[in-house]
Length: 259
Ligand code: NAD
Image (tube, rainbow, N blue to C red):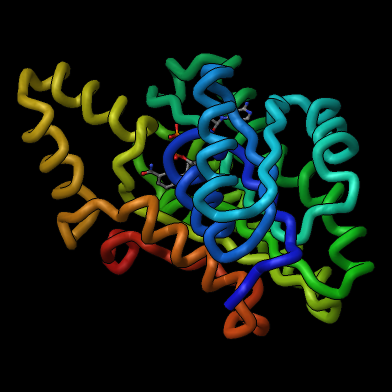
């Protein structure tokens, strides 16, 4: 299966799941637009590394996904020929009870984890429809399907993106474009590492014990999903085998949402 000739934009692809999905799409032949925050020299090295290992064209645009004007500029500057594969992955987390939840954090999470996907989709869809082919992958979460205490903004945003996925699939049903959500459970990335560290400090236990507790609480397989496994799922959803898979929310969650 080759994605040669396609261009993929993966938001938040300087780290974690987004980076692994970007690498997998590049290894399948897609040119890339990388996005996300980080050290400029490290990002430059990353661009060169993926270009060399996959033999594809890679550009980087540091648009802040909480800012619609920067998203519009990304599409104008980094993707003048349009985006064939859009992976809405950028996301942040904040953990606090509703009554203690900082208002600014609520707004940032909704902007980055949910509204950015509306903006990228509205900008990508005309080109995809004109070409008669496109893939939109929304990186939701098990928290797009079920809730957890102290994650109000994140759970609201992820349920929202599952809804957006369904509407996008319906609006594109006859166009050759598909839109699906991927719903990972625990994946050991910097986003989750911070939650493991917080648990270890709060309960005075080791990082190892905290990570075991985190899994035991939610993920029956007691194993983390790896970013590379999610890269494989993304490539599958871009393949011809998935031409008629659209509007779904696919749990990759070690049976988290099975109970
Ligand atoms: P991560 O912290 O490793 O990576 C997040 C990426 O988003 C980074 O590249 C960061 O620079 C970028 N980013 C953050 N704010 C941004 C902004 N305003 N504009 C542009 N880029 C921005 O986290 P991750 O775990 O790889 O998470 C990626 C996605 O997967 C998120 O949407 C997250 O909610 C989702 N997810 C993660 C897990 C998990 O267990 N790690 C589980 C389910 C879903």
